Length: 360
Picture (cartoon, rainbow, N blue to C red):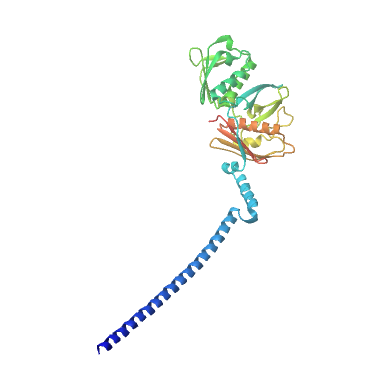
């Protein structure tokens, strides 16, 4: 009886073990199937995501213009859009830029015409390229070297002090040393005010040897600070005069030539209006437009003291000399608008020249 009981117990125990093993196999089988299902779903999900990503990347590339065979064409289109944009930053992005020598000097030439004498101006950046010359020193050199008086009044009898926008001229002599004929009187002051204005001077104070504001210079008694713009009047634009003997082009301000300098409302021409007006000149004049045939103005503006002129040129008829004359006239014009700098954008050559100025 005891043996039967033991045998019965062993049989029950064996069935329990077998049941556990079967249950474990079922559980493992379900776990394996679940894992395989999850893996399959994951693969399907990843495959879908990958396809979406590839498609998305392709779309992005296509929008950027960098996919397939259209790379160069699309990039060129983007550059063209940037180049034709009104924004200065977009314009300059597609141009080969050059920053010109900030040292500029102003030269003058007396132009003798039957009706009167004219003072013509030239801007020169070819001097002193190796070192920076302070603006006050360049102003002094320009005034001293271009004094039309026979006595060289400024060079011989004055000390200059510039404190922008003010210029102080202190004389160490009075009397006959500062005398001048009536013709020289006008040329002396026209040159003085014109050169000073092109360096950003707005006020000039004359001081006698005692440091007081009363002195007679070139037949004019000056006893108060002179406002330069009132003396010059509206200038607005510059027109070219070629001096054959010097093989050099000078420029006369539009106001001196009775060219249009105000609009229909009597207000001084804006910068774009001035550039447009500079294209035309009255027939049979001794001067000419600095914007020769073959140069077309695309856009001109002045914003926050920065003037910009964008143009094209017909390379078959516009010479390098024509281009230099044009850009020099633009610089002088921008100076009369008190610009800090002027950017001249050649849309044909994709070149940008930036000319630092002394403005406001």
